[in-house]
Image 1 (cartoon, rainbow, N blue to C red):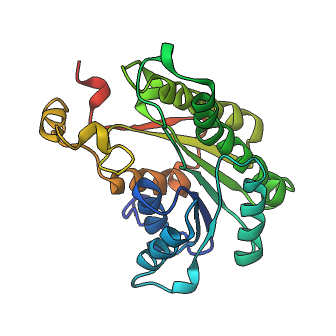
Image 2: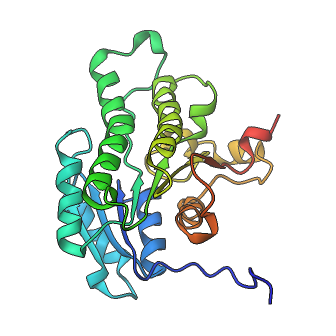
Length: 260
């Protein structure tokens, strides 16, 4: 019988922590893991948004498998607290999805101020490392249970473009962080990243809302991405089908990087 006759992916014995999990890509990833049987903890800044998201994610499944904790990704003390609360609630953490991101500045690099530089780096680059450190120390350092880290980067971290240059710098850092952590934490912990192209989210609304058709027409697949496109990639990278993949960045962009 062929080894890959079916490609069913399940996470029935796994606990997954998703940062930035109340909306967009994070919510889609949390939903996909929950539907695949995982127990899922989502975190973001606003408790009311998390409560609504958790209820929606739990629709049709055991609601006790979904929980949430409000936290601020720019606070360096929060990752350890969130990981500890996840372990207290679910007993362990198997997968960390570092999805939380911010971009408070649109414009040329020459005009960005230090305050907004700090905010972007704190959330987009420092927080993924702090969450990875916390999960490793709390759950994986004894090497009895394997761990899995998935960082949400961006194709912006692979090139240059106007207006969001500093955000792209932070995402380039995430791509290198992924490689560095994979090198240091193997073989017990796998670390990979996903680099989305333009996805239909509130976070990226300014990039697609008024010219979606124009943007889509330039892509080989002729559409912008949906959060579920990224969720499917996350399931794959966390699954046993990706057991010999680490330190890689999976581009999910509708062909944006090959259009020329």
